[in-house]
Length: 99
Image 1 (tube, one colour):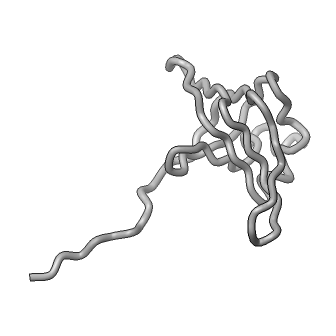
Image 2: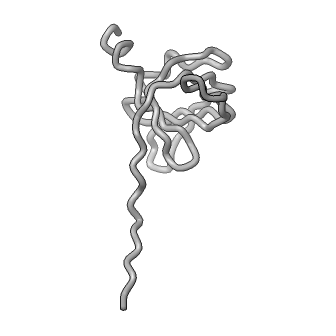
């Protein structure tokens, strides 16, 4: 009998949350692409207790939020869990449409 194992990622829905970055750094990946990382950010989603997370933004998402991510300044973002970190998708739809 053979056993199949799956390396597929579990689906993680996109949601809007208020994120307060503890720091904002730009890093360069081994392929030369730049990305934003914010370790120790506070995530506030609805009435749930605030949670400390690592926030990361890549590619077009990074370009979209680079101007609004500031240390200690809360901002609403469309995000998604990606393993143990929080991946930025972009600005929430209503804010993105207005920009």
